[in-house]
Length: 543
Ligand code: C2O
Image (tube, rainbow, N blue to C red; front, side, top):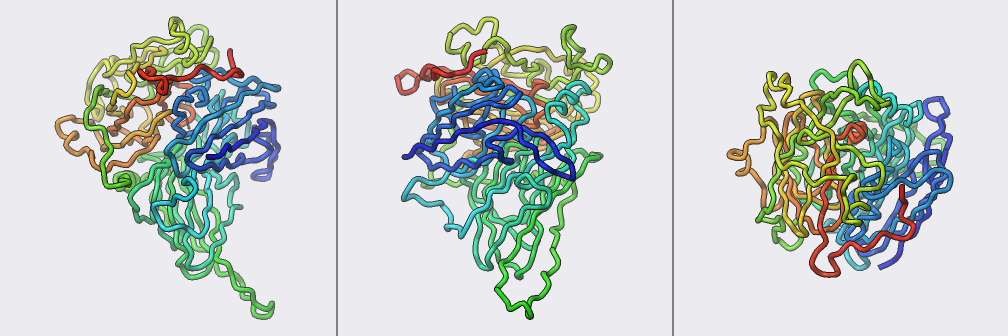
């Protein structure tokens, strides 16, 4: 096992996009940021130096952070921010039992719009992939671009009650149309696809080519053949692509998927897949063939989106199922967006419309201000920082698919609070996530920090225990860290709370995090010294 060490200088970078120059926040003057490559078993050490004018934290999205909750990164959950103008913090964590594609990103305000990069985990020395070795690999970071400071965009989103914060373009590896992947005919390429967009679930295709999906969120899947990849913000997909088409040039394209039938925003971005051409004397050079564009699904093609997720199954390493069959705690968590009146002291709030509140079980999550949740946990004195009364069930049950229900004020009533769900060490938890879709029928990608979970089943409409528990896959469900819960639909997930710390679960549409579409799990230390969260590192940022 090696130590993989990086220094991240976070600062201003001026870039030209769409004929305009824009000052962005970036790491080491690179956009997208530096790629981190490690092997299972390695220790990753990243020294962050914040030279930007903003508070910064960095999150290692999908890293399990076993016994290193201090390095997880969400602002005011695992740490106070690294202060502007020279603040520093060293993130240190081990890669334990993880292989595949993950990523890192800022986890404070909207800064992850430009502060992100790939985090690639390879098998340990001597070990192989559970699929044929690809000839080469390519990282495909899908993102969004604004012709404005993303900090201003966030203020505007909060003031206007959520909208409009549409980006002006989608990007592939930070570019609009400028990225090119060169392939050799007959070879197989491993595409490591990451959705780093703030707002949009995406369809991804390459004209004339199909894929074999082999992993999602750095969890191996059974090989799944498809010509379209569906990827929500926060998710990753590892897919093999064989360069077996007629040598030429092909577009790869990412396009917004919106579950709303009447969605008005749609965008597509492209990059090139080019076959290497044999060298010819100039007299024999032929002009390059025309570029083929893939035929994309309709922007609201939910059948394709849900079909993709439903087709994924987990790869069983030695044929043995690993899903916990005994469940200690069952939760039903309804979530979505609603509106609450502005609080008297609330500055970023539209006085007429009120503020958009995201909630889970009708609690809109409030980030603490005095210290992080994790620091309060360590002090054993959560008083004034958080309470342990996150409800296991919503206060009012109703039919989420009925129009009348949306008008019911009891259903909408949202309280504010910093409520966590306390879990014993190694408790097994099943959470049915029900997307209420009362305001804004969107898919919400829910991301859990600190764990991979099994996706046992998902579906449209109301979750119904009698009908749906029977459909659970308890043999080989796929595992991931971010599940796109369909608008007005549900997903059932299960995990074992074997990692002491404080772990946020939240919507990975970035505007929904400040709206409070979040909750947190507080996991106890275990009975033995090797299951106890150590004290924070000496340079741990305090508020
Ligand atoms: Cu990728 Cu809490 O985020």
